[in-house]
Amino acid sequence: AAFAALLHWSHITHLFENDRHFSHLSTLEREMAFRTEMKFHITSFYLVILASWYRIYTRIMDLIGVQTKICWTVTRGEGLSPVESCEGLGDPACFYVAVIFMLNGLMMALFFIYGTYLSGSRLGGLVTVLCFFFNHGECTRVMWTPPLRESFSYPFLVLQMLLVTHILRATKLYRGSLIALCMSNVFFMLPWQFAQFVLLTQIASLFAIYVVGYIDIYKLRKIIYIHMISLALCFVLMFGNSMLLTSYYASSLAVIWGMLAMKPRLLKMNVSDLSLWVIQGCVWLFGTVVLKYLTSRIFGIADDAHIGNLLTSKFFSYKDFDTLLYTCAAEFDFMEKETPVRYTKTLLLPVVLVVFIAIVRKLVYHALQLLAYTALGILIMRLKLFLTPHMCVMASLICSKQLFGWLFCKVHPGAVVFAVLAAMSIQGSANLQTQWSVVGEFSNLPQEELIEWIKYSTKPDAVFAGAMPTMASVKLSALRPVVNHPHYEDAGLRARTKIVYSMYSRKSAEEVKRELIKLKVNYYILEESWCIRRSKPGCSMPEIWDVEDPANAGKTPLCNLLVKDSKPHFTTVFHNSVYKVLEVIKE
Image (cartoon, rainbow, N blue to C red):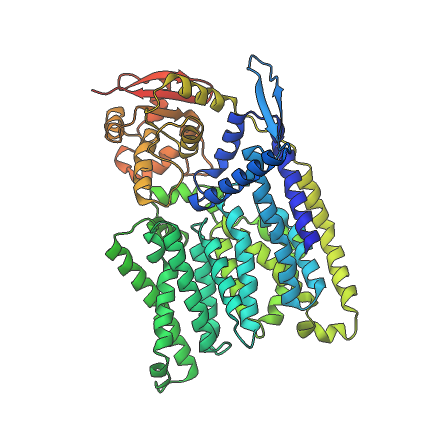
């Protein structure tokens, strides 16, 4: 387990350094490199913890006289001023990345333990770890984009799933296991808004196996209580985030708790077992949906309404502005057709299919959880980051004597496992070579010019608007107020972003300016690429606006007009090859 942790930490660190050549960047460039991916997504709770660790580390090292970073001057040429660059844990950015990579290194140790525990063999842990490496590009994005919320959150889900498996197997429940489950739930939910949907699938799977009699009411009730306590703790730690209380996850917990309390009455119903299963399933489904609707209306919460609309768009022809912003991004579209092909080439999919057939009546919870992750991954490509690692865990069961004892009586288990791993390694090693061959360098001179201009040519209280990723740069690196940023889970922010993005619609300049003035915007950062880029048919910004504003369809997009001439409603005060800053002319 320790070796697996060290190996994964080394692997992702090597890939990241190869891709970014991080050591030559200036302080501003480092901020830009990380902010591009961070996008305000990490909760303040985690940032405070990391900041405190950094302060403690640097003060202790200073106290004992140990050097924590090395700095040097980089001459960049091409008329650019020299910059100072540093590396070492004393550098905030390096410390930040190191903590994330260590956490994800420890996650690999958890995968080894999980695979070993599930299969009953250390060979199962080895299979899990190697399957993860052979399919590394399908399992995680931490090596390319460390500051994503999932980088902080997902390792705790692995621990949580291991604990759930242990609790389901145990004949007696211990307080320590339940407390550990509660804490892993909390640390999984705090950074990532998608966590509640994953836990919803887990609760649904557990309820399903309870209904058909695979676990008793006592064990399910304890798990439900732990989830409720976890939810309450997260609500407090997230400063009263009412979206948690109005989520499908919270509603599902409440409905299941109520149904467990009513079990004596349900047993009195004179119906067959199958009918009772159907009744309980329907009550859970409709009860969850109705309670979610009622609590959202009572509390006046619409922050997660876009998630419901996103799921609706997957099954029906529903479209709106927010939904199209999501579905036009590849990571929120349906799973690529190439993904199952890549699974097949590494033999991960064939092995998991064999395992699934073997466990479907013996390890029902894991079979249902695998189906749930498959559904999530197919609907939203980004969520295959839950599916692929879980497939790697399920692959460990090829080492299970309980499932394949009939085969191991004839052939040594080690021979079977190593034959499978040897076949997997043919494509798996090629995948690793492909990752290792990626060599890149972060550079964004146009944005550096923009940030420097903002810092030295605008007032500290000047308000900016523009594309969400760019606004994250302006807020972090130039410390200017912004009216929108990428925390798209907030309903008010979605409304403001829609107003800001009307610059890429076909509305009149006067109408757009009027709405920007209401938001007290002083400067708008226009990016021509946002006006013309198109990931697929119907996905350019003007086309998205045609769905939202059909009355103006057919007109020339406003952004195209302003690129040529910003007057009379705006004044161009800065421009380079990418950005054009428009000052809003107020009446």
